[in-house]
Image (cartoon, rainbow, N blue to C red):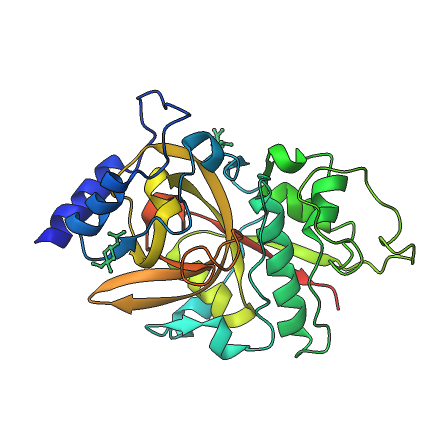
Length: 300
Ligand SMILES: *[C@@H]1O[C@H](CO)[C@@H](O)[C@H](O)[C@H]1NC(C)=O
Ligand SMILES: *[C@@H]1O[C@H](CO)[C@@H](O)[C@H](O)[C@H]1NC(C)=O
């Protein structure tokens, strides 16, 4: 019963708040954490990561834009008729060496660049069966992609368009967490080796996103973030309380099912002390997480 009430609540209220935000208030005061914990059993909130974080501080992470992707929708043809989508799938079990560690965007709204570079890094490893095992540089995208706005925000599909001109690794250009000049050599002065996606695609809807992950590996998606999300510490996230803060782009690596609830397994870029060691589960359909996803084909 609680779950039914919750899902009605969620579908009605997962929209932008009309109330003004008080930027200096705590993003998740203790009473909101208690409310999340007491009003439902799907996920738990904790103050351990948010601490005394204000709404203004939380919003430093969420300036990523959502818009319909300009990439053509992947044409599955008859594949989906013959593909059996399992109840659960986790890229970390399927390709253990290729799902790279959680990163941290710091106080920079660069989730659009992290999710894009992380997805492409994992796809290179998966498609090359581990022989091209690299972590691509989110910093290079932030500093050099003039179609986007560095630490003040960006679009996922524009990040991929930028990556199509080549991206070096993060050992060549490490992360500084701020928009810098665009480097033309590695930070140690050596020449850059660039990696490229060739084709880029949009996947629309849950089945297409599942099929894309099953066949090729992780995808990028951008969803709407509410205050309560920042305090997520485990379980299947559904929006319970708090106002809309902005958007985050994440890497979806799989899905699962628990007590009849289907959820996506996602990698965030807020460090490994956030959420479930940096990952989170979010219910299907929540806050736009599966309305569209994008990825590309690594050029090996
Ligand atoms: C939230 O609820 C969970 C599970 O009921 C509990 O383990 C945790 O201590 C609670 N956290 C807070 C901050 O109340
Ligand atoms: C989130 O995306 C929406 C839709 O593109 C956009 O209007 C909004 O400005 C974005 N939020 C932030 C904080 O960038």
